[in-house]
Amino acid sequence: MDWASLGAEMERLVRGEGISAAATQSGSAVVLDTAVLDEILETIGSPLLALIDGMIREARRLADVMAGAAGQSEVETVRRAAHSLKGLASQFGASRFAGRAARIEQAAIHGEKIEPFLPDVETTANEAFSALHRWCHEVERRGSSGTTAH
Image (cartoon, rainbow, N blue to C red; front, top):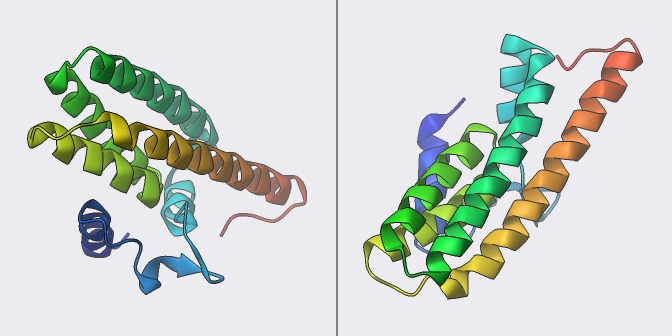
């Protein structure tokens, strides 16, 4: 995994510059960096599929906490939830989602309004979750057809 490139990409997203050309695939922005998942799959195997389900559940919980805290002006709770979402999304290759969570974290740190960013986070979260489910189905399909992920 190229941590430096991932970090640079997240910094670009936080600054609102969008996803770089290096992080595109077939001309559209990458919602999910499958290379990250492929590397984890190669290391730990099929337990990754259960971890992804757990990640999605936890990300949804954190997003709910963040939205609820934003509605109550609990800035520190928003910051902590956004920070956790950023890390969780990054670990599973959901760079765009991680970048949006990082933007909310920065807004909380700097006392900016958070509510305008929440719909975008929800959208990118749902895109990431859909992409993760598609990737899992593909891994399962490859496994059932006798081929492996690597």
